[in-house]
Length: 139
Image (cartoon, rainbow, N blue to C red; front, top):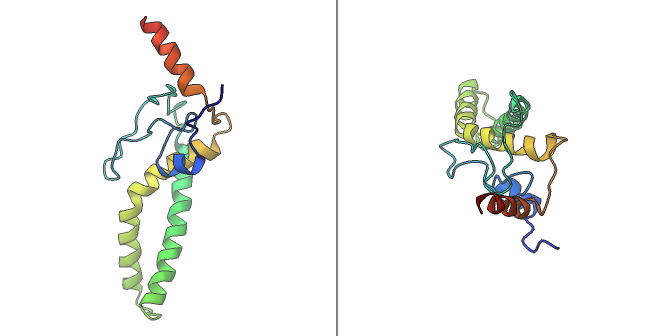
């Protein structure tokens, strides 16, 4: 049976969807409140697969932050006309680091689950199978 509602990987990444079924949300809506769901609502995947699972996401977040700091520093250099004022760079980079912290927190976990977990692969029909099993248990 072919799954007609297959979700693309790019869509799942941008919208922070489950890495296994690409349908369930990983986080509550909104970038300010960073509340991650415990399980996928479709395929019942437990997001924190073992204690310390998201330590790798800290390294991903660090890499994202380094890239952002370099990009903001270069942009500040060009937009300020090559200013050598260190306080300008510290203020702009610090502001962007604080503003992008919720984004980094969320997407470091999403990238970790989608690309860096070798035991977690996309399974297109898993959501429908889990739904059938849940309905059988209820009946």
